[in-house]
Image 1 (tube, rainbow, N blue to C red):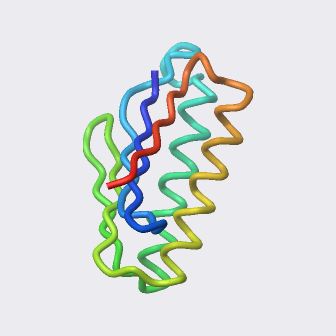
Image 2: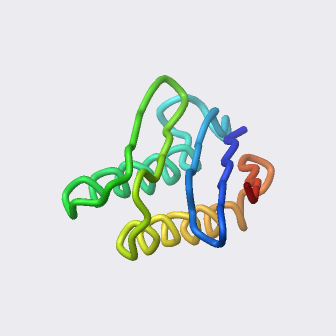
Image 3: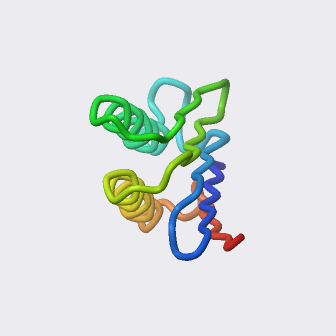
Length: 103
């Protein structure tokens, strides 16, 4: 299962952590994993290319977005990421778990 944890502070996104595997099909044919990966890597590229102060780290089975400085651009990109991930989850809830926390 893919686990996604969104952390907010005072109504601003502070972090998004994506970990695990969907295991909705065999390795290389897992469309749920492919969709989540495309969303996450596209966001990493957008944050980097548009000059956001958000760290994107990629490790085995884990992608993490950590906001260093709040700004409208970063909030918009990360909000869009969550909308996209929730859209993928709608049709694949047995493979994706999304949790939202306030700190």
